[in-house]
Length: 565
Image (cartoon, rainbow, N blue to C red; front, side, top):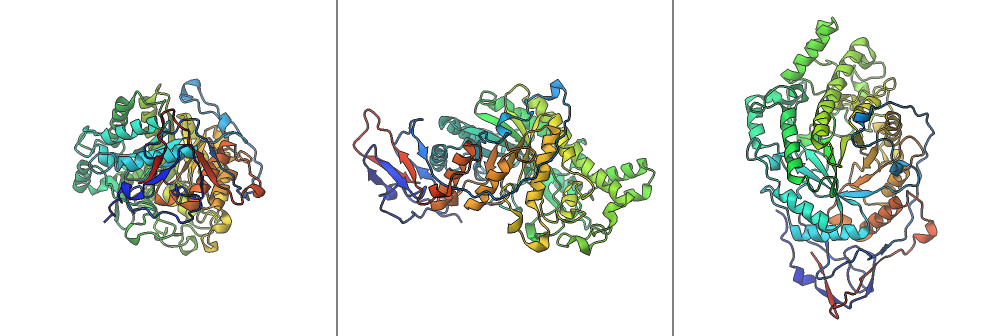
């Protein structure tokens, strides 16, 4: 049970107008001599900074001094070119000026997963309003929110409720922020960082109960309800509509409801294409302890629709026996590559059969993304909003030959085969931003036995996106508040190797973000990103404070009140 929010009146502090507050914590709007950090209720938004009856003019300035050590070395690479026809450059996403070294990289902050409640209303609007005000004061460009299919269309097919999101859009506009909206066609719950449960729409779950093969299935028959299987993309299994048609109708409804805000306040639509909104298979589900890091995961190709596709592909190759099932020697979720016949050093993955299977498996994923993004492009054409697609940063076992964890997720990336260039080219074809995770991770911070290389993976993706001439944006994979993680993102944002970042979205707004040094680190990070990742000298980092000067209104009262929500 969530704690009941404390009364605002219990934290009222009288402050003379025009006073410059020296802050060592985002939430300590108190006497400068006070060093204790306020405790906040453990509620939905957690700690939020709330300015009661104080109007902040756009000229109110933030000044932050800090330093970030940047320790990631970049290797120089050759870059190729992929021609793109004029009509495919719908959103103008050739390599942008923002991605060049030394250019400003706008920072967005992800809102809580349950920003909109199960009833369809905006969750805790007062706290949200205060939090948006604080983020604006920190210099962020905007925020990101999940538009959950399971909430918006839960009352029945084609019955949409956007009211909670409409309230959020108006609030974001009021604070002069921008909004990235995720078309979240997946379930919330059961994965890293999922703090709430939002299943697929009830009427979809009803269809799944009638035909369990509508969801991804592993070799042992375990069903995964996170996302409708791409195997039935073009089959009318959702009460007369195909899944692609259902997703398209959803996006069209969004466009009709928010047309006046698209391109102006709503600047980006991220198209969810799989579990966690990522273009991948649910190969490493954490729910019920099915998978544990750094397990290789399992192939998700055993529902009847995927099996029928595999059988047809094998028959077309003249290898009918290859279509009877997926690999028999690919092991289990928690195993390591060397423990399996398929993924070991010279395993089945590198045989003619292995190459056939992996090309089919990854090709189905690419085809799914292509269909969905084609529908999105047709829907949002001319609105001025960018489109983006998210790709998972699967960095464990990257230093092995087979890259097993990437293969089970649908990325045909091995020591001999580039799995990210085809994805980048598919996104480039539709003028879609390539959004990638794990931008904050360093190789040296990972357990040695997992053979991780997030830095090597990011370098590969940067090179692939540059070759495909597609815009690259980033996210952090895990919640991090330390200066080291921010410094790694700063280093990654530069275009020293491959593509630089055009934008970065920070995961995630919660009570911890507004606490003490966490808030200070965020403000410093945003400032650095706005200066193109320029490193602030170490001598400037000690004793740095955040100064917020409040501008006196002509008829301001002699004292103002500042409250903590």
